[in-house]
Length: 288
Image (cartoon, rainbow, N blue to C red; front, top):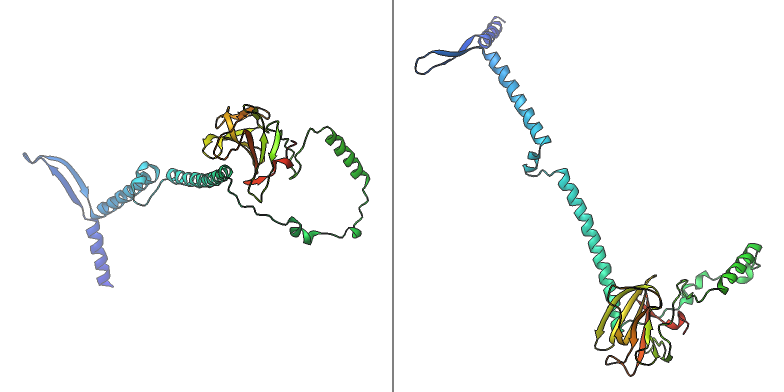
């Protein structure tokens, strides 16, 4: 115990023993500055200085742009920009895929190359058929009033293409005689209307011109996109009065009758209607 006590006193004496730090003029040895120090003071002062230095360094890195120069560290702004660019890239890829599919459909319209896939619609709804004898089909009063209202509205409709449930009114593009009708078996996805040269060809509905050029097979061609994914094509025209990107109204003159293209056999209009990338019979939609 006595040895331990002596050892503690010796350590305490060394820590608290006074020293003087003197700064002298090298030439005259004149005393400029002097400090009274002991080992404990030096240790405590050094520890506090290191802690303050670490704190200042942490604040400097955390709240200044210097942190961006640390390897592996990225700012919140850069992360947000990277996320936004990822979303934009995703959207652009989706738009690009949609545009490519759209252009493929336009090329199919120009070449007339499309599969004629016929489906028996009756077989699809066979399992949903009900036995009429088990259902009370007597109309109620509200049903009779609705029928009268619909009949009154239909009485004053000019024309409605109600085959697929649309209410879009389509007008004839040209006054003339039909020389050939729609025939999917022979891949003639259009109707041919014979008329004198330079007769005006009109748009069947409001829309935007998406193609207005010359092709070797079908001559002057103009294609218009309408609402409800409907596209109308006018081929073998003598001249075109609208350009790609033009907005047109129903009944507006967009071309004239001609006899252009290698596949033309005389002055006429080769008129096509496409719905969602598939050809449809124009006579089911337009009263010629």
